Length: 140
Length: 114
Image 1 (tube, helix red, strand yellow):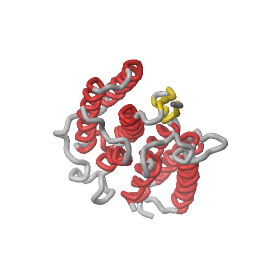
Image 2 (cartoon, helix red, strand yellow):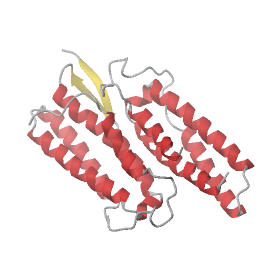
Image 3 (cartoon, one colour):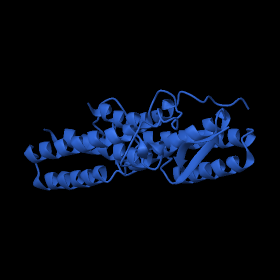
């Protein structure tokens, strides 16, 4: 079976064998986290840095990346590929851990600073993960 | 246009551009989705800059600050790296996310302030 390039994560082209859906699941997740983390880093430069939604979202990302890491470790993804993807998860976890995680801060809307209406950038940024509609999580 | 509206637009453009910048590091660099998003965001920033120039912002310092931030956004939008020849990476058989698209989702963040 031929290999196809199905992503580029942290400057590395990622290839999979046709039909290798368990590996594809992890690759797609990491592709999404790459974009989500960039959005959260941009939010960290904004007033969201002092709010509670960004930390809450960051905590969710850290928790989900941790679960993704456990799932990948327990999966039957080929060893070499698994190690490569695990290093990327670790890199994303390190990035996420540099972002604010203290949820006790006041919401910037409540503080009267954020006036974008009822929505929230941090909450919606996480929804980028929902764009993945194929390659379901492998049963571990 | 109110200063508040202008600031909200700058805030969201900063986030959208951060996300699109990350997408340029992925397959999306060679995708018409990102190419279209870049065109759209460049136009938005340009129009935003013209609206800002024409707006009467209470404090001159605030206006100058907003203009400086708009210039940075404009530069970031222009510098988004897109391949010379793009094709939809789903159609090319590379992007296997399903029917949706990270780039479109990032641009949709703009809807939060509309």
